[in-house]
Length: 115
Length: 113
Image (cartoon, rainbow over all chains, first blue to last red; front, side, top):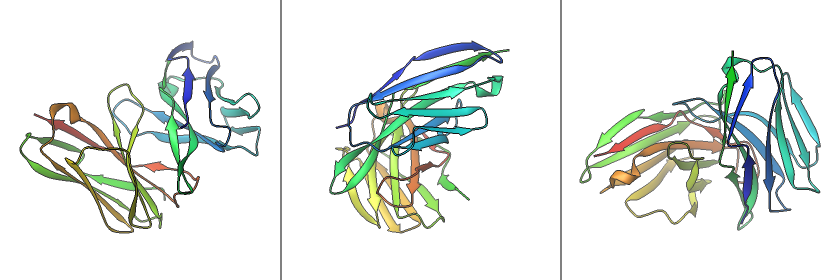
């Protein structure tokens, strides 16, 4: 099955600085990589995703890059704000058999943006 | 509208109780999921329903019993739970079981006493 490693587990940045979270995956057949943001006591919310036919995707201050050869993908947040403080989970698909695919999550990164 | 609604938001139950968690979506999604999330951990997949049929059971104990009455509803029946089952239970849906965006509900916070 798929294995997703996520680093770092905690990250503190000054407001206005950039934050980068990195993930690696093991299944070369994985082809969909979403990122979820989870604030304390709330549900995971999809913030950006990327499919394997794309190398980079950007949405305002958030960008995701994918290197299929190296099997790693990264989340980049620029001009961080205190409201970006949350736990971020990366995920990758894996083939769970019978033609279906399910997500495997990384262990999460707790991002703290210091005002 | 990417809304998945779950009830109740909070539930406290004894180890001998029987209770149910409910989930509803009106996006026409054909795959629905139950995830369990413990504090400071990622969500763990429990069950997947695809086109109203149970397609994946991730070796979940029988004290958790899923049910999909129709394409919009998903229930999780709880019986004889243990304190270690206390967690956030997240329902999710996606257009179908093939690779696609998964949307989570707000979750039901379960405490077993």
